[in-house]
Length: 196
Image (tube, rainbow, N blue to C red; front, top):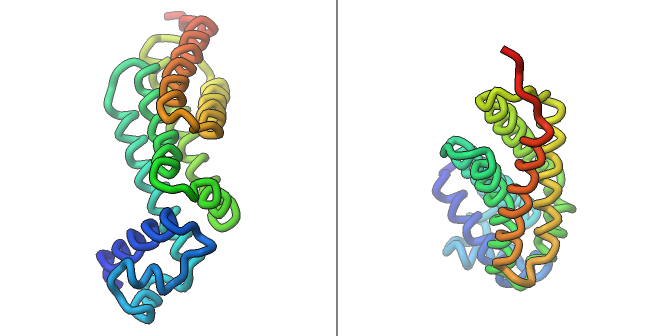
């Protein structure tokens, strides 16, 4: 199976879903946007739902790769967590910028790709937890992995909450930055130095 053709079909599906919404998009629309015949598209995706799932998987995979790169970019814990979570927030912000059907697409994601969303969130939780654990160890602070995981889950919950209101596109990013700064400040105040 040609990976380039699969990417072409998924690019076309994204274009159609964001322009028309999932319900109104047909396989003919996807085929036309891909510049392929409908039978040719069916060689790469089984149906519209399969195209949506594959597209969601691609978005999650790319976001996770970007989040890992953000974690590895160095800087303070606040900067690293902010960059990681900005990737997560950015996925939803992009969808709202590019589509009047963003709410429908997110609802469809919950229906068709909930397992992929759960896996993505679990991977993000692990990445945030390891980032927090590594940073606190370097700062010579005693911090359990359970506590780091709880902080990671709180940071993700903050991000998801900010995704709920994107009426002002710049405000959620600013609030995320402020929220993470407060969270890390509280984290530092609660942590205790390790004894040497």
